[in-house]
Length: 156
Image (tube, rainbow, N blue to C red; front, side):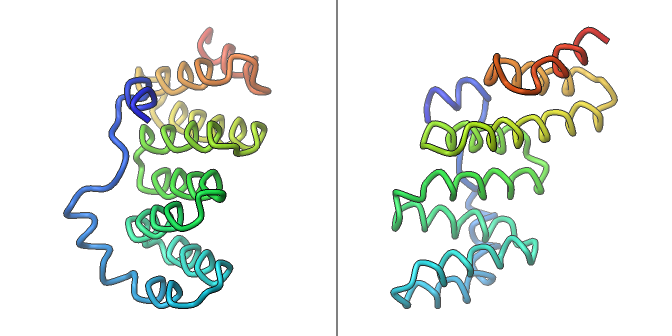
């Protein structure tokens, strides 16, 4: 993860304040941990995302990574999605890359990264932040399926 932090310029995890804010919303998730059923536990974490409780969702999926290391890539994809909805592009990219490193489907990560970077580009109205996002896509996916679109945006 240290290399990822250097590449995307971000620290992983959530702040103490965000952690405290999410504690109250984790009740159903904590209850699911008492069951010996991973499907119920993952469903409870997904419910937090649906309720837009993104910090609690991140905390839940981080807990699940510890419990189910073989599902780490899936959890990291969900954490990336939560950070995307929070508007934290750097952390979203960090977790997308981590998910790929830990076995997530290359095409799915490519598509997710492109969607994220393209959104940043258009929302920033071609500012340096948008250009930086497209450059990150190119850096992480130099042979990605959206590479020609990315390069075209940098030229325009």
